[in-house]
Image (spheres, rainbow, N blue to C red):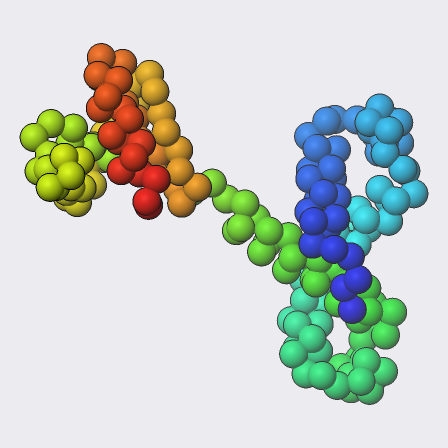
Length: 179
């Protein structure tokens, strides 16, 4: 059973990736970045497991362990029936659980490409109160060549030309606040 918080697993995954890219020895890396060496070794073991040290065994065990994870069967009974050591089964369940969490976190943290839209700022129809009525048109993708960018939490990014009138900027912001 996975007991670690997803953010903690993600943190250790990133540290392990940094370690691999550092070219340092494990102990040297931990000393350099003031990381608890035993904790690093433990988490590296759980996250990488036998992927590098015994790749044949690792590949052979994945389908068996995935089958166990879906089965709900008692570990000892499943291990006997599938000719796998219970310790290996347990370690692989932890490892694959961590790998599933890391894959989920990667998908969540993947940067979504920003969409640039052209906003019509002239000849907007006016309401009775004198404020412009927003006109929704198909978004036109444009290249980023502007000095001012407004980014809204919903993933909308508006680029505004440096030559635009200040009042038009205020109107654009007023229009965007309701998105």
